[in-house]
Amino acid sequence: MELLKAVILGVVQGLSEFLPVSSSGHLVIFAEILNFHKEGIAFEVFVHFGTLLSVLLAFRYQLLKMIIAPYQIWIKKSGDKELREYLNWDLYIVVATIPAVVIGLPFKDGIEKLFDSILLVFFMLLITAFLMWASQFLKQKNVPFSYGRSFLIGVAQAFAILPGISRSGSTIFTGMLLGIDRSKVAEFSFIMSIPAILGAVVLKSNDIIQSPPVASEILNLAAGTVAAAVSGYLAIIWLLDIVKKGKLQWFGYYCFAVAAVGLVWYFVV
Image (cartoon, rainbow, N blue to C red):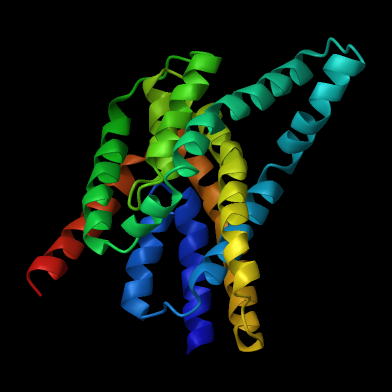
């Protein structure tokens, strides 16, 4: 039964990490429903690692170009326009990561306490629902990326540290609000998740070192990681298609339904 719960939570993490429904919020909700808390920090780190693998696989071509771009442009003095664009993305990702670092590191302990409040999750999901519903009214303007716009998208990512606020949803919405092409801002959102997810893994790895998982937990951790990686990859492909079609409001209806049911359950049942 514990193995099945680990797989379910892995799938929830993979899907909700990239779909605009809030992975942190859904993990809190499903952990409560399944009464699956004993894996703790170790499980959270491993499933985040699974989603990291999925985004690395989905954007392997773009990431390779981003890795070689600085060498080709700065050292080899290449004038390739495509590589210049990928170099710009390297710099934009760095700028977009700054707000999350500034907020996440100093307030790490306080932020973690927020995850104990399922009521907060339901209220934050209402905000995510509104953003996704409102996205249908944003018009395409094809405004280019810039350092300033990248920073504002990074601010949206930092705000999504709150459980119930979707990281992908808030960053894509902000990019669209700024007039950036929705398909490009979706790719940017996924790629900028790499340092965010990696940072979360690194920050919590020390807790695992101090209290390593016992042998009986290894299978659950592995199952959750694989489930998160597979479901995360599928979620990325699916969401990219939905963004192109301009149908993000579907997720707004879903988040509103989850929040409404949750609030009724919390206050009435």
